[in-house]
Length: 551
Image (tube, rainbow, N blue to C red; front, side, top):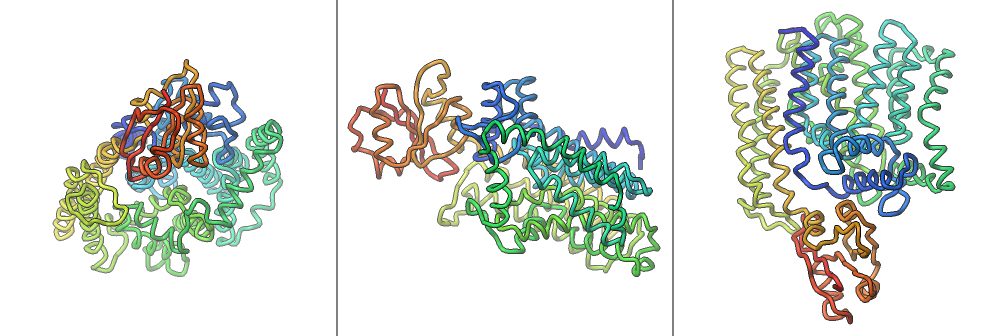
């Protein structure tokens, strides 16, 4: 196998390009998050501020500033739009893949690094976040950078990591708040505790590192809190303590939520996850060294660190009340390395597995493919289930054969397994996953776009009129991308009476309202003249949405 870093970088960049760049800007912004984030960045540009984030004319305290800075640079270079809004995620996703490669190569070898990078790039959740105009891809990058710098700085007994990791952690804190410091700190603490090395924290460099973190992370928070007269403090109260203690916006789940989410969103590599974790635990336990081939202490420490990394995220966020799959996004690099190491050592016959493990994994790949075939047929209406609230997107059914890629791959994997051709086995699942995920991300997801109403409603209703004095409002319809595409504040009506009064004003007024709400609460009850200027089915509401004007 080629060991050249340059060749490996090229291959990893090619894989990331294949699974992220095609049709990156073809889909309109996803609500709620993409619409709010891109809209906030545009408003900061228009107001000329780099400090105070606003959306729809109001202070936005939900997220810190790093994503807005990154998107602003992208908007300045490429213009305001979906492609530019998502480009930072793609670039930082690639950065995370390369960091994962380098970390795995330092921990183990080049083969593990290369496979770890490909596994990460083609894991469903990581690929999704690397397309999204959200803070998740930047956070994953800066957390991975923090932990990479720690590992590189400490692996030979060095202490420089106190400084380099502090800077990276400060950038993570500017991306999503205190977790940028708390989670890397927890991981390093548990890792040192496992190794009985807590005394390594007793160093003057720790204080200097904290001061360096303060210099990076705190100034923006101090300035934004001062400029908003303390209003931005709501970020710490609501988005940190509040989300941990209370299930906000209905995002709740059982304590095992993230275990299930990890297996679902690490597909199709999840079929190897059980074996990878089993092998990593055995490798991290000194008394079992003889049973795993006499591993050097470097391998033992590496496995311990990766297990602490993944375990800290799983346990911490499992205890939190608010649960969303992206919250554990930063653990995917660790899980990718563990999976790659497991497959590489199996391929080179350095470990012996029970005879059923790889056949079961092969069947698992086929099962994942079959599940996707069924899901696309059901989602496309080809298999009618008539479930309550089911959303049908007819274009999905034609993409059902994409799941067949994994089914065919499973057949080839079984063939190579029977022949003892382990290298071909690994190459088959890798190539099939790149093709599967790339097609899914570039084409299948975009079938939903015609059913996302905000961009079409704005275009058809003529509400994008930045140079004309008009007013926009919504009743029971709060998709933030309406604000982004209309480039205008959308007032939130709280009642049918308020909406009716809004349409009676002398200025041109446009009301965005679900058709059923209009029919039940407003139709025939609005005293002033009105007309419906746009009507679209909306995937989010699973029903039609209207734009009604007094013009």
